[in-house]
Length: 174
Image (cartoon, rainbow, N blue to C red; front, side, top):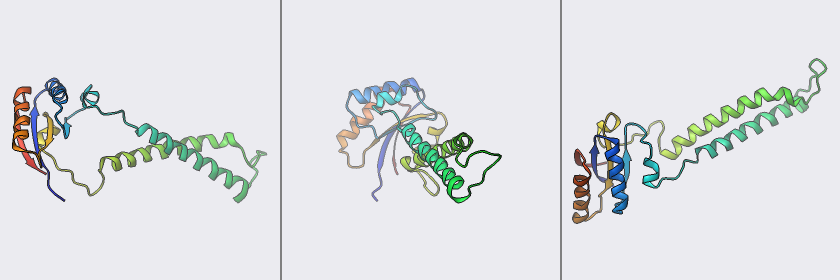
């Protein structure tokens, strides 16, 4: 796999970062990624990112949990182990509700965590490169992939960082 060369600028304030991203989108610059130590409100629409669909995955996993609990208890109490408890019928749906609820929540939560890690390429044994250690502490970053970029285009990116108030501009191979 070929290494990427990344040109990135560090910003001290999230408002300056938002302005820089707006300017980059207006200038039609191809932003590789934006990093911040905490969620920046309003950044997703500026970057043109759509709303996450993790809630749809949560619904599907919850539905699988509901069906698993309901069908398993139906099978157990009607076919595998039919016992009459205190005069109640074999198939007593109201008695199933607490277990159905618990398995719905369990499947939805575990399914969403696994989906989140799979979609984001994270998990055990995965090491993701860090551009600068201060990005996780107090700096904000806009990064451009300049691996196969012409020198004049790199100059445009560096000029962009100077104009938007980046405190530092660096290049790193990841």
